[in-house]
Length: 354
Ligand code: PMP
Image 1 (cartoon, protein in one colour):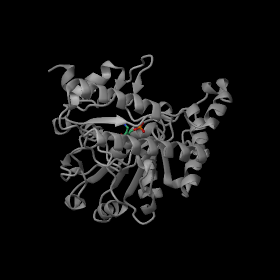
Image 2 (cartoon, rainbow, N blue to C red):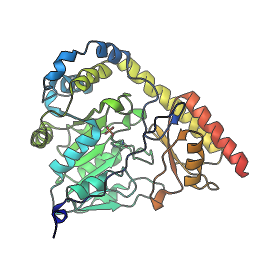
Image 3 (cartoon, protein in one colour):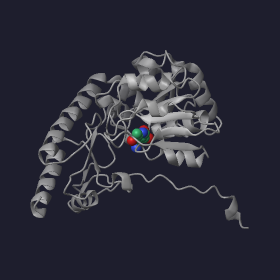
Image 4 (cartoon, rainbow, N blue to C red):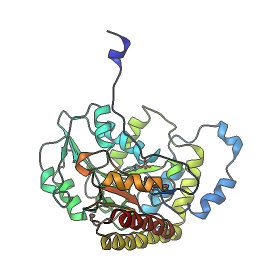
């Protein structure tokens, strides 16, 4: 016996690499290619350096309030955290305490099984249909909770609000978490259902559509009881999760709705164009409604394309998972970035005689 027998051993989540090379094209972690809203920059100038000696508001009231107003909710229906990863981790701790397994799709955000292992939550990863869609019938079995992203990641596929509702409605005895990290790129949020279903928690982030991945802001929306339970666990872990700059700058990002809509519309337009070029090159992919495309080519091994692009300083995401090894996840960047990406892909195909 040594001290190591008392260690909580986990296999950690592996985040996408964060290279910082001159002239790189970074299409690997679904960040927004455009800067945050102008007001964020203005507010940065007004941050009071001397205030940094003080703790921030542990309840993050100002940011909670602006989000509640924006989404037509009461403040008691909103919880904020350090990116949606923090919000989701707290939600796992708070709501998934059954002996029964929680359920999530087999191909999905690869943090879910990591949190489940970390918190010793039993789980079942349910295979998706052949077309990568979620079949709500699979989720009508005994379970200790349910979580899935909508749109799903890394497939990019959106489920209809009817599908989401069927799962929530069919599981009134457990909490169903819908991870909407990518909902702003053309999907319909399950937010519309939170007044109807007590057991529904909707989680979103500032990291993608609000161009604030570096500030680490995520939030959950649900009925006041769910939010209170989240706060109880948060205040049992770390009272001051949201730092002062994030609280101030996050508010500015929410305030500029015109910029938010313009930016997401631009990304959607680029995505549609990229899809049609990739299609004409013979790539196959689920019809993404997110800010990335999950694509494979019948004649090109996924890892090879990833490596070839990496050599050209273009970073996309390849997952070390045998189920999806032929695929790469390509974040939608600016039009210029995507043109450079597509030009490289075409050159590679020419060289390989594909
Ligand atoms: N959910 C999904 C499905 C994601 O892809 C990501 C991004 N890695 C997150 C949550 C977490 O994002 P963040 O912590 O930046 O809000």
